[in-house]
Image (cartoon, rainbow, N blue to C red):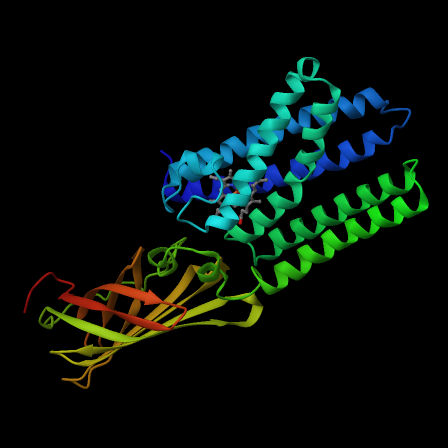
Length: 361
Ligand code: HEM
């Protein structure tokens, strides 16, 4: 059976493959337009590969869209893949994906109708479709969870370099005037530099998810890829009473060595018992969140001198489950329902505690 996590991997994987195929399609298309060929690869073969790569790109984008909608993590429907800028999730950057997809579909349809619509109309759409490439690249970095991970950044830089070299080769091999050549080369370099400047000031910076238009309830959640729970203690003595109290405090993200990201949620309990609760999540950065692979929880009730320590056991949207125990081995299961706003750094909500043995004390 497919889980949300597998679908998420499929979305990201199919998106990356679609970007690679689109890059290869554009590079081959540009080169075949100046008649690039070798003895092994005659011109018609280059053209044939170009056509098939386009169809394969469309197939991977369809897979990317279907897995995105089936994943259901973000409120994205099939109409958002066709109608640009109408989605509640990162409307501009997801919308650019829809624009790229629409252009690809127009390209395929007009290629099949080429004899009916005439060469000029077909060529017009074809030129427009080349615009799908920078648009898809901006979508990938503006929407993708991996926009700050080295593999997607490397893929983006490699794609940019390949298309830039192919475009410059076309400019210098084509029979255009010196002035036209300089203007076209300048335009290609300007597009590449603009993309790099946009990325550095946008998706590369912490806080992009909020600025990109991610709904706040999704920003507050962290996708759980794996977690470690300390081995349960051998004996349970005198479980503390169950309680449910309001909590308020702060949430902070910070960069750690090796590009890892840490999220610290510090809360004070308002009621009986009062006290302090701190949750540490650590892992690889994914978008504005973290793919958690380590966690720590400490709870110090105001009413006792006991310190409860443990780990996060579950993350689901705004709900965090944790298990902690004190030096005597008493275990508490904590369930926090939080509203986190990384932009302002505030955290509010409630915590419910029950002894791990299930007793209400
Ligand atoms: C030519 C068209 C497209 C290409 C080449 C493309 C490619 C990509 C790439 C490379 C990523 C980054 C994946 C990552 O961060 O690991 C991405 C992310 C994403 N794309 Fe597309 N995409 C296209 C169209 C679309 C369309 C039409 C939709 C609409 C449903 C869409 C929805 C998404 C979503 C939701 C994400 C974020 C996934 C995540 O990282 O959580 N894409 N896309």
